[in-house]
Amino acid sequence: MAVTDLILGVSPQTVALAAMGICYLLLFTEKMNRAVVTVALAALLVMLGVLSQQAAIAAIDFNTISLLAGMMVIINVAERSGMFQYVAIWGAKRVRAHPVGIMVVLAVVTGVFSAFLDNVTTVLLIVPVTMQITRKLEVNPYPYLLINIFASNIGGTATLIGDPPNILIGSALGLSFTDFLFHLAPVVLAIMAALIWMFVHFWGASLVAPMKNRALVMGINEKDAITDFTLLYKALGVLGAVIAGFTIAEHIGLENGFIALFGAAVMLLLYTFRVPHAESDEKVEDVLNHVDWTTIFFFTGLFVIVGALEHTGFLQEVGDYLVKVTGGSIQKSVYVILGVSAVFSAMVDNIPFVATMIPTLKAMEESLGGREAMMPVWWSLSLGACLGGNGTLIGASANVIVAGIAAREGHPISFLRFLIWSIPVMVMSVVIAGVFLYLEYFL
Image (tube, rainbow, N blue to C red; front, side):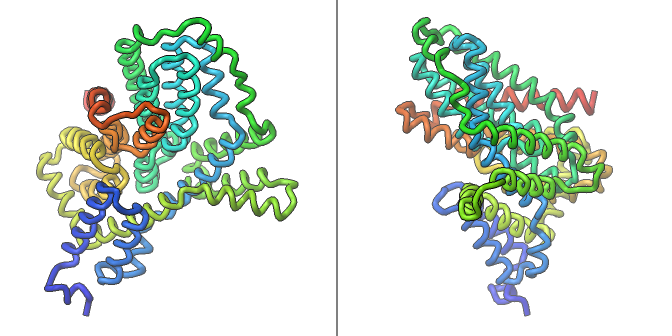
């Protein structure tokens, strides 16, 4: 007899729905660690018999977990060389420390870095440099911080590894790095151009600095940011090889997660090469201690919760309902998913939303003509979920991180003040994405 039969006759599907509802509630209130929330609820679902241990393990996407863990190790070692700060300072000096030029450079650098790093890492690297430069220029840091946030979420949309929703979608569909680059990078470039134009248009006239202050920025030696040139060359080599591996993964029969883990192993090997054993252990442990294990366990538990919803048939029912609502139209499905994803992701964490939507969309594929016909819908999910993160101050982790740093520096970003810019930016981004989807698939 299943344990669920003893809970006042409540069906397994109702229990799974309750677990997901509690998960969203606790994540939204931020009263508990998100990893604790998902892992505890996942364990509870197994204990109640909603799904078996075997089914729970099968629901975990280990390719996604491996890709996340591997890239975290690689980036953690790479950032110790100082390469990312070097690029930001170098770019600021290329525009002769002009305040408007620096804003544009920081937006581009943040967007490009976010395409290959996770957004939180990107802003943690760039925002301190931003604050240093704006202090020397004695200009209002607010527009610079805002564009850091928006560019990080927009840039992360462009690639397989740029944002967790893309990692989830890519792993679930077996999409390659080049698939994302080909279909999403042009959209992201257009949105970035529109973002930069918007900020230059509205903020340009107010961003001025005397030559003596610009000279202070020009006096910063970008090479001082490089802490280890040998490590820099090693990191560039491994990063280049891993990204090359992603682009040919489908042709060599390897999963992106395996490539990332192999790259992480090589990076650690090179990082500790010819280092005494005791010191080598300390270096490796230090790197592993900086892996975001909260995110890894969060994903693990979340996969099980979503697996329970799929196992009990709920996601199939939602898929059937969406097919009915859209009348089986791919075009209607694209814009429904794009809009819903953007709005939902602006309000809550986009990761659980995308994790839930993936099996839902898979359930729709047969009714809508199969995987190939459904690809525009999948791209709309990616675009909506990633771009929606700019909608509110809690829409993405990077937003919260930047707000925290800004508050510590004496330049707090209030929730309502952020909305004045975030809503127009999100709407503009989603509209441009919708136009690109129309031109590519429906014109």
